[in-house]
Image (cartoon, rainbow, N blue to C red; front, side, top):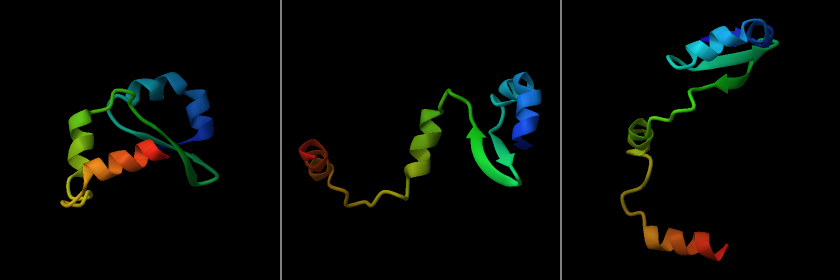
Length: 70
């Protein structure tokens, strides 16, 4: 759903209630400037979204070493 900033200001409570069911994209001057999302992240959906993005030959130990050394 897309709404304008002024619509959000006018009916904030309505959109806070709706965000449990769907993301709300907030526009200003016709351009999307923000997204209002549910704070309770579906961890399984997030993990499934990564399948196919990460390479199969990923070396987790090497990545961990790089992260720690920085």
